[in-house]
Image (cartoon, rainbow, N blue to C red; front, side, top):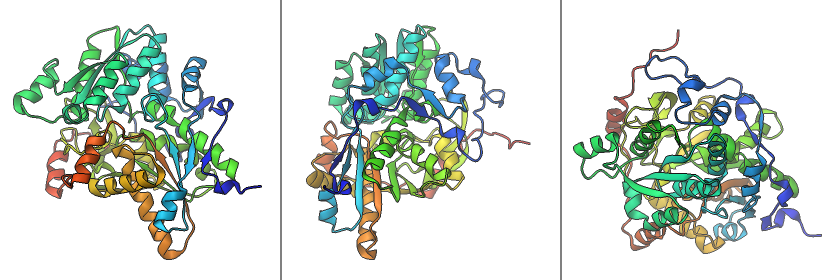
Length: 459
């Protein structure tokens, strides 16, 4: 019998799709700080969130239950691509000459080509169930917008998307894909909203940001009782829905009888990283395993590694509640790097809290190092990764080369959260040598965080 540890592809049966989402809040040693109303500075309640979200999602956002049942209607759509495969990167290992074992959970098999439908389908279902007729949202690279447009098509909802201008210009085929699924796409900042017009008046050539696009989508949703807003990352319920990734990975590793020593994920808002690592963190907190958990973010948008841990708005215009998170300031305008999904000014409050508890670590990478890793991965494993997960791949390769030096045979796991078939212009720039690196200066960061709202420390 062959050694299961030598398998290239580890799969699960359709019957093994997780039937429940896992809520890490139930197992953390302390709860994260509350979300605050920007006017009263008191913790928000369900009524404060009701203009934007259906009650089912609001209850998931504040739930302390360890598991939440996945509705059958959501599972029925999940079956189009779940369970997703876990691969061992034998060819990459050989090219690196490393004794490390590298595994990647591949979410590029979904209809949108990324992990985003795991929450988009759930959010569209709950909104349709609540009688909502339209969802608005923002998108960076376009993967979230694509996922939500697809999900809305499954449940008969209209979908309106504000796409960060830099990505709107860089990735025209993402726009076409969203429109093919039925979405209406606007570049952000736009002249369709008060928030967008204010930015354009001051910066007519603005390349946009996720914070600005969120302001526009929230503004439109708040004005129409039949329209809600959907967010693709950051919030607790979004991270909750993504835990199907890690739960499947736990079961797949059980099949081959090993556990990861290192779990690596790219981080922008935090949903892909959380989806992979929360079920493993559950087992770590229970004393069953002890992996190192490492987040990887862009050097041009380093909220965890160089931001401040403070209360901040989730959007540029200051329309959202205040969340305590690692942030570069809600007025931060990122360099238009190609990893559009990682250009958010803040990190998920839940991820930020876990980082503050010392349960994970974080590093940053420049985009040329990341694209170098992406090209090496494509040439060995045969998948062109999206720019976002190349950050995690760069960190995996770095660790595998350390193992080569030390002779240590670590088991490394990462989430390949999407393919880069619609990001080939970025690879073209890298291959042509025109891709540049941008790292924020300390002065730039200090300028942005100086605009943080004044929230008194709790008594």
